[in-house]
Image 1 (cartoon, one colour):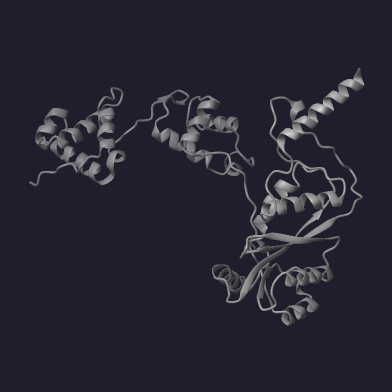
Image 2: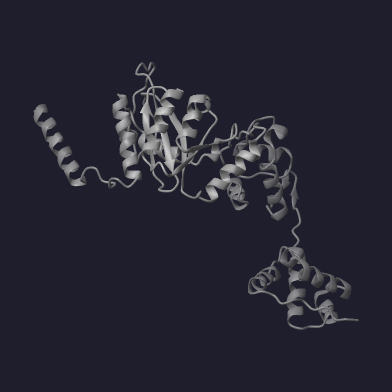
Length: 369
């Protein structure tokens, strides 16, 4: 009979085998680890069976399992049941907890989402566990890499020409056309005059957090930012308009056309918004060396300008309370100037601001006296 030998054991496996060998509460793991370690020491299988108390056939089976599946193939953890359920969280119990946490709460408890307390209550009611603290349950879920995450929305495109349009735009992104310039165009807005919540750095305490007024009526009207993103230079620019009809859009396109040489073909990526498809706009584009690439319906994510609007909103509008459209427009233009490399990050020296704050406090103290 051919002698069955264990394969080469890695340093990690050897350390783990010695740990399993010392498990007094789990005789199965201890014996399996002894079999593998003795086989590593070139002890014959018949002698291993005598030392461990197994049959020669079972020793060969354990070695075969380890050679095929490693440590997981020879480890064994029993489920210790108490009157209320398992009292030790071994691998199989933790696996059941993870499976329940990843299951649909609508089907299991008739609610839209889990909480730690509701998950614990369900696990106890199903006798998967006897009792567990919320902190230990949170720790077990973290070890299984199960975290709380925000849900997302998604729209499937219903455009019958989705794939032809998709491939056309992707080919444009992949390679710049000869003597051409790629530009992504979209509207950002409407821009209301309203306080916008955001985030700020502050010390502990409610008074240190910036406060914004609440508005119930907004009678200042709206503005629309018609924006263009040049893929060749990486610059973002645009115009502000009170409305976004085809006349304003055509004016915007003429402004973009004037920024580049007439010998260059402008390849413009935009959505299929009604004013973009106006006959006058299409006619002007043909006469002025401009080609349009329309994104499919419900697929505006193909337009690379969309991700630029996220930063624009965060750094120019969030945590602000602009009272006039001119003030709001100046804030957006200031951010664009920094983004396009037309100004440095600093607008005012830090020490001069400190001096102004000290002078203001001195004036207020003098007035109080």
